[in-house]
Amino acid sequence: MMNRRCLVAIGWALLCGLILPAHLPVHAQDNVPHAPAADASVLRLGIAPFSSTATLLRVHQPLRDHLTRALGRKVMIYTSIDHEHFLDDALAGDFDLVITTAHFLPMMMEEGFVPLVRYKNPFHLMLVVKQGSDIRSVKDLRGRRIGLPDRLSLFHIAGLKWLGTTGMKAEVDYSVDEQQSHMACILAVDQDRIDVAVIGRPVWLQLETEMRERFRLIDADGTSLPTMRTLVHRKLGNELVEKIRLALLAFPDSPEGQAFFTHSGYGGYVASTPADLDAGKAYEPLVRQLWTPKAHGTTRHQPPHSSD
Image (cartoon, rainbow, N blue to C red; front, side):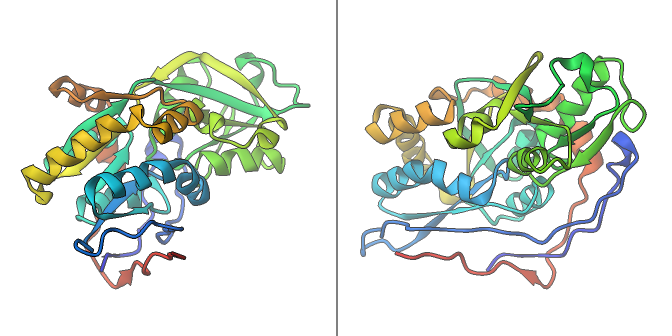
């Protein structure tokens, strides 16, 4: 059973002078196909909480089903309430596989995770405003309420860094409103609680069409970031690790994989190389500064829900 101590609020004040409360973990599951009766062991796939739980499950269901069939093991998807809890969960051994942004890569590799593949397309930093907003370009951001995903997400750190290049200072020239995820940022814009959201382009592509029609995108000066990686823990053993690697590389050629990569905007897989570790090194010092490791305590995960 997975467990953790409740998060004590930490000083992202180092970035913009705010202290925000912690949240308890969350996860979900739906309609997982049964693994063959001969092998009932479960592989736990942890996905960084860059979007809502429902969206993560919907978008990644084809991958989960493919891995279940290819590996002959039931695969279940987990996520966490925010990126800080996700990092804690992963390093505590709560996941067998992870899909995570590159800024966590060095720390996860230290704890036994092996990078297998990365998405082909880089992440682009985008601004989302309502259709009727008077914000038309970056110069219109002064004095606005800007929403960013949670403070340990790559897009929060990179978003603040990019905003700094515009010559504006957080909580001086604009106010920062931390949201739980990219999707939460978009909903806050929709509800007029913030003026603009900073998100990753793949999140935009994964929205339903009727949702996208209510908003307008503004390019953040073409800023691109390293894409997400899929890692597996060495504890599974060399034979299973290699089987997972081959299953992942076969996924883009399947009909389900083609639909997944078209809808998600990820563009396919590229096999990981030793040089991929460099993608996260630039962010590692700040991640270590912002993250507070937590010992396992009395707060426990609930069993994942499954309707199959």
